Image (cartoon, rainbow, N blue to C red; front, side, top):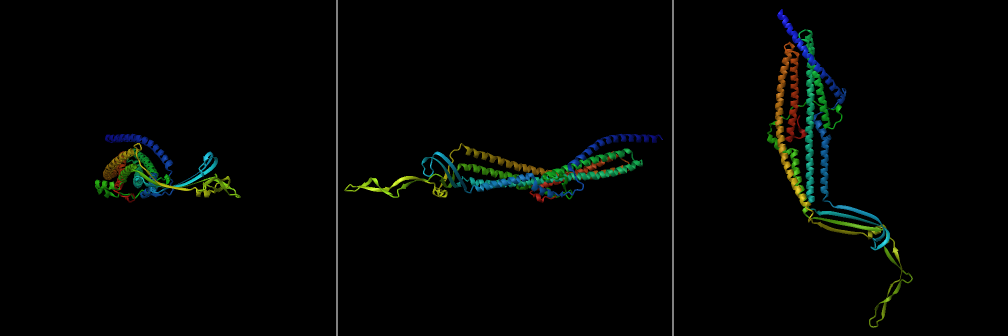
Length: 519
């Protein structure tokens, strides 16, 4: 009898302790439930998901292709490429002749030169002039040739920059996409496990009603259910935020109706790990745009040095100019002849006869006055007053304040800096590839370890569930086992998609095009 009472006392003490512990946990979980409700309100306000809306679900390939056409950074790279093409067009245009026209019209008052007679007169006149000049650069110290070569290299560098940006954006999109997949998988795990908890609540309620389990176990399971629901809300919020991040990469503003295909993504392309790190480095140096851009920049610096040295050489140019002029002033002064007596003898002799010495007189026009001649018609003046000039000009640099020499020195220093950047780029790429290879290997080990841990936790959880069903462990120990199993499944999801992403990074370094990445 005493043994029975002692046992009942211990059971009562155990029940009191259980109730006390559970009461403390319930109080804590009530605070968490309030936070959970606030999370739910935030999600409702931010996402405004419509239950009946037909949402297009994007695949990873669709996201990458859409980003290639709409991402702002890529659009800026395209503009840089267009600017490089314009620079190339300018370099080609340097070989072509220049053709320029000019015209002027002016009014003069006072003592000015008559543009027709060249005499200074007090007058008010209007004068106009017109000219067309064609010039061509015959020799510019090879600057035109080297400038064209540089423009072609600059266009190539812009193309490399665009391709590098495309690779970077593809990785950003893939990483953001896989993050959404990870968060969605975590939500699915938490929801599925919460369904198990809900079922466990019903079973525990039956066992409590039958007197098999104390009511504290039921409270413990209910508290675990509240915690799981809070975790579900937080995980759903994570899905929403990761979807918004992906949508912003794609320049999509309709966040509420944006979603992705969250199935069918497996671990593919593992054969890339069969390559040696040196093979990956060699391929990356050939295909990766970082090294190609650095090499092109070295060649550009070499061309800049050649262009700077061209300033030491003379330049030759040729020109052809056509000009004409017109004025509203009279074009000259004409004499008036007496029509009745047009000729008169000269007052002075023009010579003497040999022998006799007789004077000889000549005849001259009988001028009775002078008359200003009115301006000729506009087109006739242009025809009469036109002229052509042409020639060749040579400029020989002798001294220009050491500016040419200093420009050459600057170009040499810039070339040395570009060569150092090229070496640094190769070293950085080698280090990055080795790091990516080690990361991928490590991600594989982490994934394998996570799978093993999940399998172990699954067995432990199943064993704990069996023991809980027969009353060998309490609800708290069972809840802890279930939590460890849930975390193990989440770790597997995280390790899986992290491993997939690191494999894609290695494939890009090995020269696999973005469009051929395997998922």
